[in-house]
Image 1 (cartoon, rainbow, N blue to C red):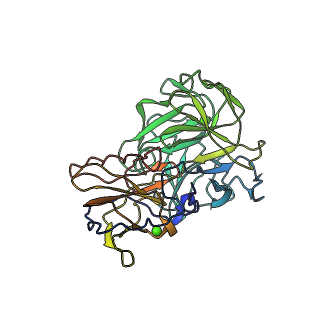
Image 2 (cartoon, rainbow, N blue to C red):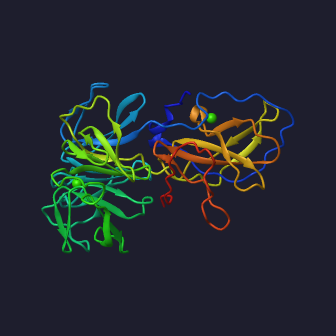
Image 3 (cartoon, rainbow, N blue to C red):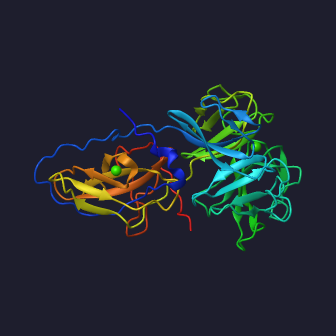
Length: 403
Ligand SMILES: [Ca+2]
Ligand SMILES: [Ca+2]
């Protein structure tokens, strides 16, 4: 089986994807040949992650040097590194998170930084700074003034949001950190929720703050090992550790340059970045964002060239991070009978010609990225439509659209 690789993360900055709506196609009057596509069925999708190195690092795929104020995108097949964000030179990235709003990021730093003078006072390593789509910086989370103050001696070295750009903030610290009488370990993930008010102080430590309890999951992560990057990738807790670390079960050693996941009952390596020198660790890692949902812009037309075929066209996903597309097809009135019609958009033109099955059919267009597929749209009662049988990707990643 062949894949259409280019679209995955590569189009993420300008991308599209989405969810669909129900519609009726013309009955098929006669059999028609299948449209050709380089990749049409389900299969694994290459890994795509965003990262930032702890020190200037020469990757050995294309021999670029990536600096500690730069963020790269790594695509797994074929392996490639692409610089996607350059921060001011006084920023030494500690943690990154890619937002669903286009060209927007959350960043934490190794040391105090004004982000090239953009901030009137230096951000501390316990703060989170937002970089918006225009390139402007603002304080997003102020460790000194939130409810559940982050000690000045702790750095937020990993972070992500849950469920979309408006979601809870999950953080990890670089050292054991005491907040509200509780001790959080360096690989723990800790949740803050919004309190309203919309300032960088409008956060509180969640009542049940431990999202990932490093000492209790599996046989525990040694406290000497720190997660310098963390992400929730395809529905699994994903880490990059600062030192080689033995994780059980099943007893695997993860080294810098790898991302390891807690897969529910054991640890597993998500990816080893080709050409990444073992001497260099990641400081930030981020998943490719949420694929999102397609709006109401789904159209079905008869093919002008092939009798019986239909042309499905759609509008972009609400998220900038849903560059791939899956199209599902089912029998109208037999809810929900949909299964994949194609798992790729040839040419990435938001337009695919399909040979439908007999009878009245419905189509759903679903955005995807290498983590999984997004929303199939909602039913009239507001609930998500169920996934297809034999879905294009193993995981589904649902999140609210960016507002
Ligand atoms: Ca950590
Ligand atoms: Ca196409």
